[in-house]
Image: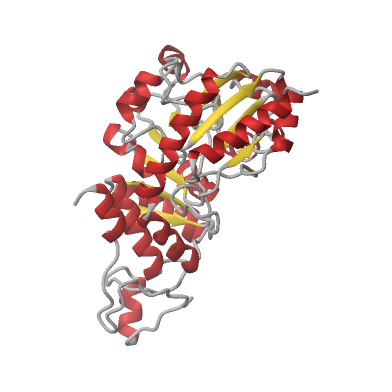
Length: 393
């Protein structure tokens, strides 16, 4: 089946008892055994079954199956949030003395996880410009266990060459983990390019409605089981069944939503780039983007819903524009049906040291826009009105 058909049907089935088209929402925290022998066999791993909600849940497994199919993966594990998936993907590969190589352009909470938590347990890390493969090669070592790649990057929309990074990770025996949240499974399939694991904040584009937290990691059965062991069964980062049901619902329309959002983002990026009130625009679909050729090679069906930009006049002008939005919503998060605008330096990347923000290209005047499915002319009129307000001191 083709991608959009899989999005609708994968992981789902008609209920054999009631004939319901939508799978049941199973809230039970525990599941009954037939006999003492059945209980013993399930705990010994000799027989498949549902024992306890922290271990398995049929509603959650339906969501996992759908994501795995859409990513072309053997397996997937759902988690309580994107950060739980990120933690699990790192913890499954790391021990004291291990090394992580990550990009400068990275979600601040991922960087904070490395700086303030894994470092306490003897894990080393380096942040490099991953668009510079020579810098990547120079930073790799025999102790490198994980090469972490977030592409497109949050919030600068830098694009990293997944296939090239996979080759270099393999050269030192490291795993390449790709955070593909910005791209979603609709626009990018990192496993096809050599990645070992892919993580998503399912809260974002996968869910798509801004009403359910969740995360997911996909890859080989061995890799996914390692993440499940640490993030879900040990740390308890369990995705609630109701959220799994809502995220499965979101996946069914992911292609429709991303097609519209990506087209809107492309149009708005082009208009912003041509406007003299805008200093810089960052969008992988623009020919002016430094890694446009890489994005065109490794992304599918468009370039995603995220656009970053700086206004002429820097932060003061940006504040005036931000306060003038009427259709665009002032909020963090992304991948929503609504268009959301955030100021990374004071919100999502506030926890990142100022020097690291500067090295990653996150200026105090940078704004990130997650483009929704509204009529593009309404979005442009709101941007135009806000840019006009920015020009008036």
